[in-house]
Amino acid sequence: MTSDKKSCLVEKLSHYIELDELAESQLASLEEHERTYHRHQEVYSETDELKYLYVVKRGWFYSYTDMPDGRRQIIRVLHPGDIVGFPDIAFEYATSNIRAAEDGCLCPFPKQKLDAIFEKSPRLTALLFLMANRELACVIDTLRAMGRMDARERLAYFFLDLTARLRITNKDMTDTIRMPMNQHEIGDALGLTHTYVSKTIREMENAGLISRKGATLTLAQETRLEDMVDFSDRYSRLDTSWFPS
Amino acid sequence: MTSDKKSCLVEKLSHYIELDELAESQLASLEEHERTYHRHQEVYSETDELKYLYVVKRGWFYSYTDMPDGRRQIIRVLHPGDIVGFPDIAFEYATSNIRAAEDGCLCPFPKQKLDAIFEKSPRLTALLFLMANRELACVIDTLRAMGRMDARERLAYFFLDLTARLRITNKDMTDTIRMPMNQHEIGDALGLTHTYVSKTIREMENAGLISRKGATLTLAQETRLEDMVDFSDRYSRLDTSWFPS
DNA sequence: CGGGTCGTTGACCGTGATCAAGTAACGTGG
DNA sequence: CCACGTTACTTGATCACGGTCAACGACCCG
Image (tube, rainbow over all chains, first blue to last red; front, side):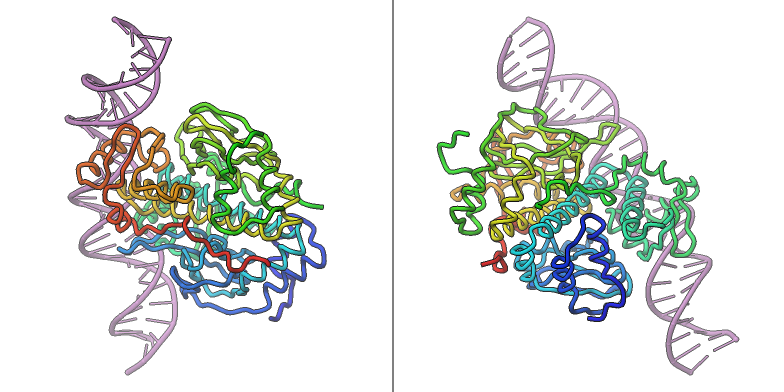
């Protein structure tokens, strides 16, 4: 409703293409409503009937799925300016759960609102299409990590990915980030137990790869971490050359 | 070029919505050219400059990524009627490799061709958007399998997923499929070694869950397999209710 | 017949899970 | 202000799933 500064969504998207007035107003209409959530609050659950997508306005969120016996897999961490719900858009019922990683705020909008964009803004349509496919590429990177990396490499990949993402909207960011997720959640994101996350992080700290101070994390040797996991930044540059007019 | 019967792409997409003439002709234009590949031939490689997407016309293909030390992760198996390259569309250079799992045929088309669809067919645009996001949901299912399932469950999930996909275009299919991938490839798809794939498949066969005969695989107890992995079919039904006009 | 690919089986080992105990930081209420 | 829960992190002992390495058999094709 209220927006004192430029929306995070517009800021994030205009990193990639110039947005005209129509596009900006269409995006603004996605953020007409907002709702706050407190740390660890559920936004929606698997098997909920789902007619909405969300734009993250403030705070970190994450999507996850549970197995019947309680095993949990965190799929993707969501930051301000991200659109939540692409993988669920194809179905009547949600395929994943969303939860607040810390206190934050979301803007819900009905799927239906995409129509107007599809009909009147081919260029913005292409960008949304691109964002969904970029997310696909990122989940694939995570899949690669889970399938073929050991614990230390997975952690390296996870931290590098978060850092690269946060740099888009935070151009003067250094190699230090705030890390509001606990080790249990990190483990759920990487297919590890919180116990082993603790041991491995400690080990990486001793090796001088990273350092911690409270909820702050520093990538002390970013390029060595990148080499460990053959890291590619999927955020700083996208191919928009084929877009319409 | 030549097309004796209806295209697989049109067949697959018209499973979900009625396609008008414009849409059908636009889709047909994606299959103007074709090229054959033999078993294990590369289609394109990571870091290739990439201006094309592909439609699978015949045969199974798969996408994969390699680690510098030779570890390999197969991302996704591709069947006739599937569109190849969504995760790469966002970037100038490919993020994955594509390879033929058996002899087959692909139809390449330039990314640029999506423009005409984005500009003139909002309904088809929405469907392509949906297909990309459905693929995202499927990769997420695989991620869940890799993060939180043991070897037997991963195999169960893998076979169930392939079967559900093949049923879309093959309505009278039973619980038996042709499985042209070898155990090394299956292992690369599931983060296992071919040795352990062999042991686990044998074990599942002894337990009466599946049976094999040459390159044919039968899901002897499909519902028990489904319960093991809390399986959801992502193929038979999609939510298209929010589509434009 | 010889060589290649593919699947099978066994012995051994290591990464990371499991279980358990302990510490530190924090907010709450008495 | 301290007693107390709760949550987060750490560390150690033990164990098992699945990796590694190696050998062998079946099959196909030249």
